[in-house]
Amino acid sequence: MIMAPTPQGIAEACRLLKEGQVVGMPTETVYGLAADATQDHAVARIFEVKNRPTFNPLIIHVASAQEATAVVEISLEAQALMEIFWPGPLTLVLNRKSDCPVSWLAGGGLDTLAVRCPAHPVAGRLIRAYGRPLAAPSANRSMKISPTSAEDVLESLGDQVPLIMDGGRCEVGLESTILDLSGEAPVLLRPGSILSEALEAIIGTVYPFKKVSSGASSVKAPGMMHRHYAPHRPLRLNAMERHPGEALLGFGAAGSLPVILNLSETGNLTEAAANLFQMMRQLDKDFYTGIAVMPIPFTGLGVAINDRLQRAAALEEEG
Ligand code: TXA
Ligand code: MG
Image 1 (cartoon, helix red, strand yellow):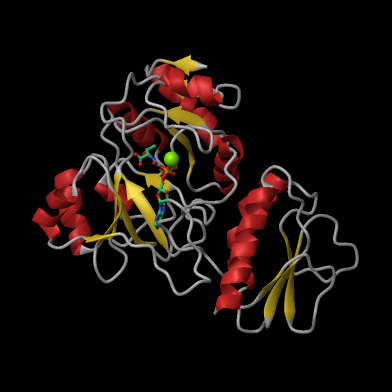
Image 2: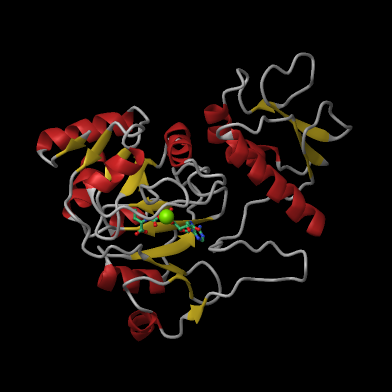
């Protein structure tokens, strides 16, 4: 359903977000599919609705630079750029704060987070009214073009999204510029309407993004701008037993198997997705020699879960 951004509309959106549901949110770039960034289950719903075959990290939308300080470490460069370009179509990748409340699934399990403060007044009103950051990728099904009106969202995802806030047509129509400030030098990960030159005028040299390649085995996918999370310990998939020293991560009924944690005892894939990164991080400890994961079916969100596990296992083999 499309609703006007009246006080009642905003209140209804907040009610749904609190329940862990997804809501269509207008921004100045494209419409986003928003969920409470601090609820793992709500974030899992985003991936389910978008039908994404992998768990890319999502952009965390905040109402102000002040609100960003609760989730990421703000460097001097970041502060300077926020003062000039926020609110607006500039996303900054920064290091997560140690007490960051954002779901590990939203951040793809990484130690960095992409944050942005949208300039669209309805987005601003919604995030402020909700009082927590919202994770939001573009509100289209995977591989489809990004929506720039509430009707586009309705057409693409309407049957899955209980509420779309109407904010008219998006002014920019192109996804935000993404700048990575988490490394030694600033790197432009995605070009957008805020140009590299404009950023350089404030912080000096900005490097173009080059896919990192370390020989034939490097993972290269089109549009892949982020590193993937992988535990430090070896990961063994489709495990039906525990080898000595391993931590066994369960899925579904584990019977007498000595599982330490279970992604979902009832075999619920949404719950498993919500728990995935957080549980892998919990088991990635010195006193285990490796992490063994029970089989996960390749249906629904199971495709994305297996994709992440396989990538993590492959990265480990590559060293
Ligand atoms: O304009 C926009 O940015 C729109 C509106 C809705 O705000 N959002 C958007 O989100 O385009 P999405 O999920 O479609 O694209 C987010 C991109 C992904 O390609 C992801 O790789 C990158 O941001 N990203 C997110 N977190 C990252 C991180 N920690 N490091 C590197 N890249 C990251
Ligand atoms: Mg997108």
